[in-house]
Image 1 (cartoon, rainbow, N blue to C red):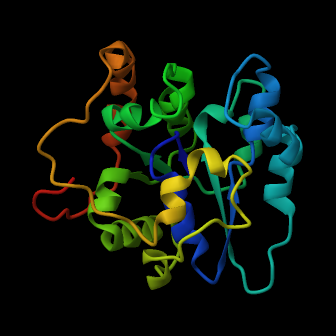
Image 2 (image 1 turned 180 degrees about the horizontal axis):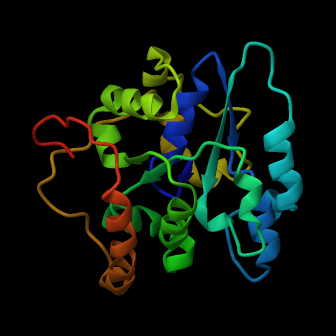
Length: 241
């Protein structure tokens, strides 16, 4: 599952992890990404680098070949698109099925700026996400649609991936998981408190955004619009989404 930060990606990972037939992997290329960019300041940077292999080759080989536990038939990897730096050979992703989780860039930026105040286009991953979509294709789901109609969205996503839908995907126990990356205390507070997808408030106003981020928003929009053209169509209740 390819997404950028602050796209409800961890809640979607929770949803899949709650299936009895699924194991999840949380951002397995994060250590590689930070190790490759020594000047990049991220919360918990040293912990993240130490927690995973910094080799993309080792990581992707493991995802493709490591045996699954008994009774597990689905391996779900939550990937941040900006972790795929030019050094990564995209051919290594050929064994996998691909899907894409997107979010309106204004909402994305408003959320991201609460953790890192001065993001760049590369931090947000939209450009990389559009590039990966062109490379691999696959179903696209908008997080706003998913929050407004979780069951319909998950059923459509599962159908597009050829995986049976499970009612277990609609809720999960609150709290951390052993599968969470070591960066979770910096980013996952709301997910730890959650027990399911929370419908958005009716859309009456746009999220407040620091004026300094408006130029970045303008850069993001063409990539989001390109991906949005291909998103799964979901029936959304009136006033939501």
